[in-house]
Length: 410
Image (cartoon, rainbow, N blue to C red; front, side):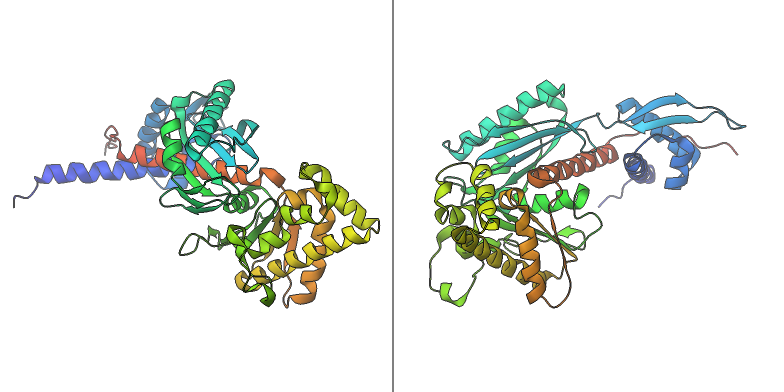
């Protein structure tokens, strides 16, 4: 076997090193919220001035870094200021819900440019539904002045179990005929951009940890109660998916020995007993109306002393509190965030759940309402998309050719 020429090996090693250095400089630039100078990049990266100068010039040529010009002198050479160009590309979020779908377009920092809520076209099959959603996102990008060819990544949430590695929704009981749906592939074909698919409640805890109630809590849980029930679990700052990507599917949690031999179907025991459908069955005023109307009236009636309403509210509070305490016993989080349509319409329920948990849990645990509300999963979508887009930028630059770095004389 012939060995490579020494010059070729050196060139390859030098090229690889230049790519790594470029990725390092870009990473620091992305982390800076405002403007920065070349001297600050040198200090943060530990690279030489000629190396940083060449790499910054390359980043400016690509448009990833913007030149802001020189600042006032402080006794020496006037400093040159620059900043990361967060609109070099765009990202998007899709929070697919059983009745409504939330869409957003953001820059590379995840800062929203625009968003929209559309009815989920539930009467369509999965392929047609996702095609309709993708079309709505394309229209939203056009309105925001974000060219579709500069869409670098999309974060998409689904209300069900997701095989994240394959981008497949294995099942979503609150969406018609959603079983083993290749959501990632369908959206990538429709949008022409990489898509990361994740369970919506997992995205909610990411959103709350990023910009909501869970900031500063690296081991925490988001429990969602609405049409469906689920939990997102963050352990040491990382999502816990489980061996079958089923971690957090607490809808199927058995709520007592009397339910062991009962077949609750795909909804599971907990969701059947405590989800919005269960409340509607026990509160005649619900009928088929929007929960935003009847859920507050149910809790108002309970607070006013209506026995029937109080019985319904007390039972759902007990069931949720048992689930919260059990999740807390297994995960031992510093914080549990309660969110979803039920909590959004009934603030007093959080207090009721907290009181019961305090009686049955040994160690203290903070229980709070979602700070982001219904927007939590969409915030998680944008975070996932922005992280993916920036990673792809760094990788692409590392693999690209960079002009040789000048060697200082002497």
